[in-house]
Each structure stands twice: as structure tokens, then as C-alpha cells.
Image 1 (cartoon, each protein chain N blue to C red):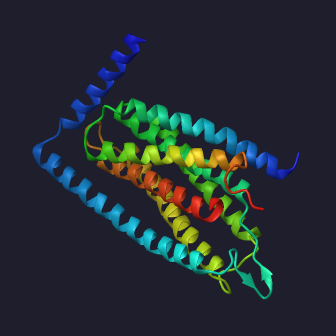
Image 2 (image 1 turned 135 degrees about the horizontal axis):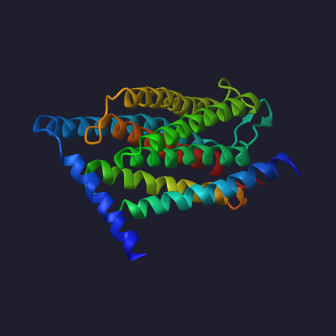
Length: 211
Length: 66
């Protein structure tokens, strides 16, 4: 147990040493690029927050929820399917984390395997979302519930789609030698983006399916 | 077995598996420093929270509609 902990810490130290083992110019631009990427994620967070607050406002100010349209109350969304699809997306966050960890620990084969698993799970989530759109009994027009649902989940789905393309490009770049054991900012940014997309879904899942 | 039970079963098992893995990874990375490591830890924690929510939805504690 203690030996495993020591080995784990040594692994962390080796990764940290490789991370620091870059020329000064790269080190400085890496920090700046990371900061810039964080600003991008914050701006994306503000974009989602705006729509989320609009949805919350519409919902709390409505006399009944789900709203009544043409004399009929709209149905709730299917929680069980959404819970299953959510787990698919959260699972992809874990596989992406494993992919980056394996790259840091110089296991390229495992990196490729986890990255492919992430892309497959991301596509699985998108297919699940498409299935949900095909069976859900509301439309974009005619109700604030439908408009909010399709706008927010559609925007999120677009982010997932971009993320899948982004990860595929990162995978190609990694296998063409663009990244090394010490210079892999693109992979870090890709992982952060993918985790961000997962976390946004936590908020949307809670708002539309659990609240 | 109805479709709903299968979906809830998959969600329950998946949420446990993914949630535990996320927490273990969070524990493993706890000593890591730097802006990216800190943000990763925050996002992993929120993802674990998402797994708890999915688990509660799977067992009908959350999201149960009258």
C-alpha cells in the first residue's frame, strides 16, 4: 500500500518534471494560452448562464409548469432516459481524464484507446439527444418550455459536436507528433473543454429533468 | 422488463461506476498544482455531483413527477 503510494507520488513528480522541462518561451506562452482558454470557458459559461437565467425566470413567472397550451398541459421530460444519457456523457469525462493522464505518463497506446472511447461516448450522447428530440412531445414553437429546452440543449449539443470534432483533431495531431511528453497544451485544453461541456450538462439535466 | 427499468438500471450502475471513478481520480490528483490542475479538480468534483444526481434520478428520488 505504502509502496504503491510512493510509486504514485514518484509518477506525479516525473510528470511535473517533464511539464517544467520546456524552453522559457514555450513555458510563458503556455501559461498565457491557458489563461486565454480559461477566459474562453468563462465566456462560454456566461453564455449558458444567460439562457439558464432566462429559463428560470420564465419558469418561476409562469402560472403553471409545464405550461398549458391549447387547453392541455405539456408533459414532463423523460427523466429515466435522460439519466442514462447523462451517465454516458459523464463517463466520457472520465475516459478523457484517463486519456490525458496516460499521455502525461507516456502511455501512447492507452491514450489512443481512452481518446477513442471518449469520442464514441460523445457520439453516443449526441445520438441519445437526437432520439430524445424525436420522441419528445413538444416543439420549439408555441411554448416557453419547448423554446427553452431546444435552445439550451441544442446549444449544448452543438458544443458536444464541436468537442467530438476537436478531440478527433487532437487525436490525429497527437499521433502525428505535434505533442510531446512535455509540450501538450492542446490536449490539456481539449480535456478542460470536455469537462466543461460535462459540467454544463449537470446544470441542464438538473433544470429540465429534476427540478 | 419495461424500457424504463432498463434505462434506470443502466443509469444507476453507470452513475455508481463513473461517480466512484471520478472521486478516485479527484483523490489521486489532489496533490497536483497549477491552474489547469485546479480547474480539472473543480470540474471532476462537479461531474461526481452530476453522477449523484443521475443516481438519485435513477432510483426515483429526484425527478419523480406526480
